[in-house]
Image (cartoon, rainbow, N blue to C red):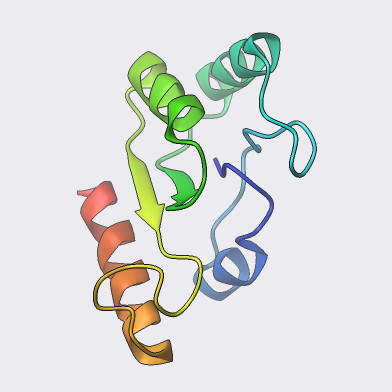
Length: 104
């Protein structure tokens, strides 16, 4: 599950399968009805993690996590987006470490 349709390359690189997006359309905050529909979808098609960029609103991902028990991974979206993501290699290291931590 992703917050926003921004992780296409990461999904492709790691072979991740996207179950859905928190935003019904890019840049449009999720409505309560959309979140409820995602919760129902996750009951049928479970996800292992909810991906959220550090700059995105935390509330929708947190609510869905609380409702489903699926952990949230807060990922830096760009170099400088988190401590340790000071260059491209650091960005990859931080991203993979946070994904790994969320999946433990």
